[in-house]
Length: 311
Image (cartoon, rainbow, N blue to C red; front, side, top):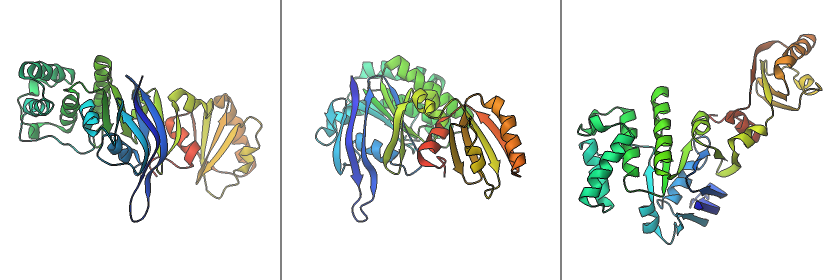
């Protein structure tokens, strides 16, 4: 069953006519964790704002839990939870009071509300901090409380807009674990936006890669990486070097040049490096560094756009 259906969605701003979202289409299945991946300004947040009824689309259609985001705004809002990029907690209240206030907004009765608060506090391991004012929480604790809050009313779809923005590496990994645990325990459909390749890699089986308002690739992580090949050998050198010689090697399946480095796709790259270095020596090309690796999502992004995700 498809919980989210997006077809030919466009968001164009008045005045300059800029298309922040440019004719995108995708579906998300029930219980799936799906990522919209891309650099800042790619259109990810705009897409989430449309799906959560915060922005009106210029054209196209979008449905969440079977409700149209234009025609059934209230029904959409009752069916979703959302964690924004910026914290939206009341820091003067305790963690429990924040959850209680949110549950009251959704009309959850007292006994059910109290039971549910205990459930979600346990899920994000904040039971011992429940009665502490939120302004005493660390950044990671605030993010965990926001996850608990948006789950409290049993949403059918959860939207996480850059859920680990500004967090350190250790805290980011813990938030990933909480997201997975919430998905496993509740079976809720999750859509997240991120420009962290490793975040999508860790959480999702399927991603849509966005750039300049368009979805340029959409598939499972495995299929996207298989597009690149078995091994990638990256060579760093002077930008003026004659790198075309590497393209002519019979074992090179694909050749990509990016400023001062080239990436060569091949089978059994570990056995091919000596031959590559021999060619470089013969042509008088100084190799500054060599890197052998399996394809990553960063390589997929490079493949489709010719630039790194953080450029």
